[in-house]
Image (cartoon, rainbow, N blue to C red; front, side, top):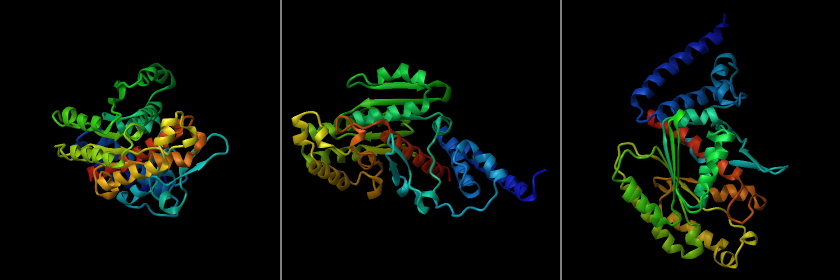
Length: 341
């Protein structure tokens, strides 16, 4: 028989999980909201009752059998979103990242989701990613998380067909992933206006982002800002009581010495990259300035990984896009729980 303290914790867990699960089932628009609500509760209980159990798959058992008091308390979910990019890098052998161990970040209980965790979170979801080669690399990171090595090897060549769209359905989990090749901002705007707006329901998750082609071929920051503002207006034109979870994929750090053509080294400079970043901020498309899209800051992540993580000065090793993906997934856990509430 469980000791009284553990029995109380078990009873509290039942009282917590059952009503929240039923509420999530009835109130959620998609399966993702229901399953992510459950996942959020697991995270909540784990941070309070089992801070040393790092695997999400152990969280329910930990909530029952590890009743030690935690050294910190969980911040409210909205307060945790600004801390998602606070990560640290190690370069002892291969570059690796982890969330910063400082108290504000640690108390949020961010987790690197495994294949089972991500499958639960994204169950029944439609994920649309539109953009350039950076966006394609984010899709690769997602497929590496969701698929076994044999399945990944069979689909990866299709993902990297030059300048092409890519579509995959993971039937056993009901997950649909669409990558749409959209190297210019007007391509993203056209997609939103012509393909997405007229035909709800919308994707559950949308990741948008481009700029490398504009930086190379146009090299005009004010024109880029106008084009990004067009994307923002198209997003605001979506009509649905529940809009998709939306993310903006930022431009990477550029390593001039590794850019492989004189034209790239001349045009794709740090100064122009800064100017493009200022234009994005001016449009107020990003959540931090009151806009609809949360930034996945590839520039910050790639800078932390460093020059050794890129061969061509603009596309980075998979560890950078894995970090961006895990930031996005943790944001989905928080945002989906907010929608359930």
